[in-house]
Structures are given as structure tokens and as C-alpha cells.
Amino acid sequence: MYGSVLSAAAVAEQYGAGPWTCAAAAGQNGAAAVTAFALQESVGPTAVNGGSTGAAGNGTYSGSGVTYGVAGPACGNGANRAIGLDGAAGKIWTTQLVTNPQSFTVQIWFATTTAGGGKLIGFGSGAAGAASTNYDRHVYLTNGGQLVFGVYNNGYYTAGGTSAYNDGRWHLATATFSPGTGMKLYADGALVAQSSATRSAEVYNGYWRIGQDSLAGWPSTPTSSFLAGSVAYPSVYNRVLSAAEVSAQYSAGR
Image (cartoon, rainbow, N blue to C red; front, side, top):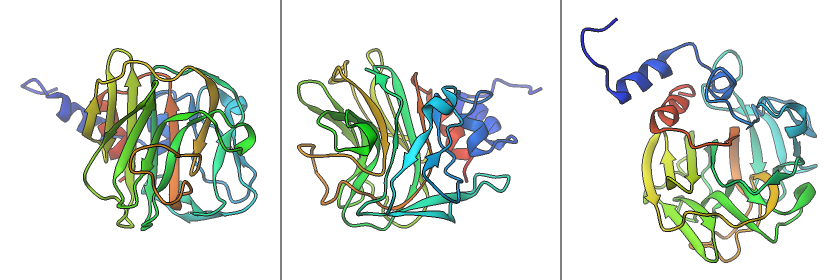
């Protein structure tokens, strides 16, 4: 008990200081992700889903370009591994068709030194890892290492920061969207960009993609749509996480 009212930031710090791992923070006793890949496998092709959709939401690793068991963020309880992606073939995709998400949060830990950019996480129409003809709701890196969150609605809408994150350190990218809140982009638990220019995302059904999908036409299009780097604990939520929740997710992995 405290003799004063704690601020929202102080409450988030209390939450982050608790016995949370990255998996627990995303799980049903945490923020309740529908899709959550710990990426702790030592072999493919299945990325086990720890989210509420269960095995139906499992992911698939590409047959090449993936290195298992590389060093990851400090996610606790012996679950500190990650997946290395080669920037040419490595990627992960889901096989469960998702119907037109309009309120969502996407989140992923990443570490890279690439100067070629690449997609971190996003939504696309391509099945079984094929290139998508519809693609948005994504977070990607520019060649300069800046983060961009993009939503398509008869045009390209983005929210992006100015800082570079291709410094080889582990970072957490989080993007939220809903008709009521618009677009928000967080880096390492802090809000870095937002936009209310669109209140709807393109209407189509698709799959969640990690590490690669088309980026043609998007502002500051990177040289490569494939990410060369390491990724860990990507997750998807069917609601907008609050700023306090995003801060707590970051605290769970550092």
C-alpha cells in the first residue's frame, strides 16, 4: 500500500518489475495475445503459438535462411533465445486465415545492423509464405534503420520515428491501430509517432508475416523486404494495447 496515488507510469513500472517473462507478459495472464511466438525452437518448420488461438495459429519457418537458437533479449526463465534471419530467404508466416483485422496490436523484438531495411512484422494476403498482393498493418525498417508503421486505405498512411535502430542492440517495436485511436508506433516501450489520418485499414483477409513480405510502393521503401537480423517474441493482439501495457512488455524483456 502506498500513501499517495501512483501515476500510470509508476504502475507500469511495478508491473514490469514483477515475475514476468516475455512469454508471460504476452500470455493469457498478461496482455492476452491471440498469436505469440516465443521462437525458442531448435528446429523447424513449426513455430509454436502460445496465444489464445492455440495450435491453429502456429507459424511456419521457411526452409532456408533461418538460424535457430541465437542469443535473444533477456526474456527470462531460460527462454532467451531468438531466430536469426539471413536477409535473403528467412521468414515466418501463419497459416490460419485472419478476417480483416481493424483493431490490433503487433509487436516484435529485433536486433540488426542491416543497412538494407526489411519488414519486421505485418499482414498480407499471400498464403504459405507467398508474396502478398495486399499488404499493410506492418512495421518495417528503412535503409537508415528508422521504424515505419504502415496502414493502407486507398493510399499509404504511415507513422514513423527519426531514430535509427540498426545498432545491433535489442529493441521492441509495437504498433497499435483502431478506428477510435488511429495509428500509434512505440519503440522500446515509448510512443515515438502517431497519426489519425486514417481510421480504417484496407478490407481483406490474410496472414501474419514475420521477417519478410512485399513493401513495394511504401514510403522510404527499403532495399530489401527481407530482414537481415534476429527476431524474438513476435505477437499479435486483437485490441489496442495501452501505453502502460506497452511499457510493461518492454520491461519484461530487458
